[in-house]
Length: 353
Image (cartoon, rainbow, N blue to C red; front, side, top):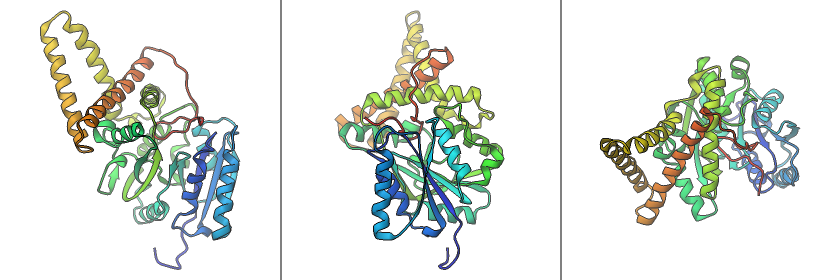
């Protein structure tokens, strides 16, 4: 972009509920974007938080404005307390030609908007451009989980977590969208408690829209800090993957990587049961485990050479995949469970502890 050129107006949005601990950093990361302030607004869409979330957000804005001048910030209400409803409120209220969102547990790369707007301007076939996602954590267990979630073996072909080269992809996180695509493909489905972006991106692709990953920018998010939290998230994501497949207007939002954990769990159940009756199934079960843990060790070695940490990563891979597959299986058989609002498939958005 040349200096003096009027840049497209961009609306950034953060949907939030009870995120006093993290919201300040998320707000600041948008305010510090390397993008003209006159061509940018920030919407903070709050689901009637019961803590100091809104006050913390306003405090972050006040600190920024003391040093850099006035910025365009609006505060909107999200009475349904759903991520999808919050995003839809923000999109409909947006003044921008482009819209971008991050979650309250995340911080946007300073060049996220600038680089993604460049891509959208240069590539008319792209309707959403985003950058890589890196995981930040505060504990040793959290770092272990972060390594698992940033590995191809852990997350399949979710290239925004590990890719090194830019290019066309099947999906991105924290993308900058052309606002016009929502008029064509529809808005986020508010029946979905999770995996809303899978459904939305499937409909976008059905309309001919393409996604582009820009690896020169890397935003961050705070991962689960313990294995129990990772299990709950994976179980819910597996469950809502099946719900999404059943409810979605387009099956394109669900890819093979979403179904592999289900197949893995089914294979375990079948082979364990069958091995009681026939020895050949015991050998097949052993072969499957050798292949699985061989692959797990291979990808763990890309993260660390410490034997203890490698073994822990292999265990976390197993827990992640089995939890996801079990969630999918539970939904297939109609097993109900408690659902946590504001907890999405990509980034934490739950009630703060």
